[in-house]
Length: 285
Image (cartoon, rainbow, N blue to C red; front, side, top):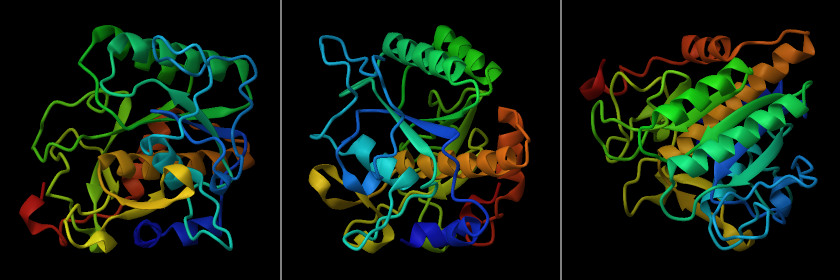
């Protein structure tokens, strides 16, 4: 779990492990809700429909076949045990899994999901909401407007910056001003140049693995489908580190009666981040 050491997570846990009054929405391919390593830390869905895939009549966001959403949930809040070393960044926070794509994602589906996230935030007035979006979608004015509405409700938005290994490549939803855009690092603060997008549109970097074939120790260890573990890499896995770190910041402030606006959360994260130019001279600036 080199990723936890890279962001000084164990030191953070001495201060804050996350509050159940802060929920993190995993907007993804669905999550294995029966994975005991996630500790059952899911918000009660009730009769809410958290499955936005057309043609699926089951409103549950569960998916036991695909690993992506479960792996991201593991980065956020997996609970270590005698049988599993996997640990998430914010194990005290609750998860809200939402299932919105299997292949490509349409802007229509994303808008429906964002509407439900706003409904959730309004119905849980004493709870703060963070959203992790590890996907890409076409640029869309109505999606951008929905994201702005989310921020107006105090929702913190985090997204992966993309895996094209390009400088200033356009990528959405991470490029929208309302969203914290996350690039990827490997061990020792090395920028993941093999795949991570970079440039002025990136707000912050976090552990995502180096993606070097033949050396899996430089990738992330996280949850897999079927109660297995896997080594993975990508900005998809960097983003949930930041979403969970945001949840820790929000949790800590809530305990002292403070409520941070999304822009204030972004400023805390960015201003306290380590400058890694020295470790990455080819990418200074």
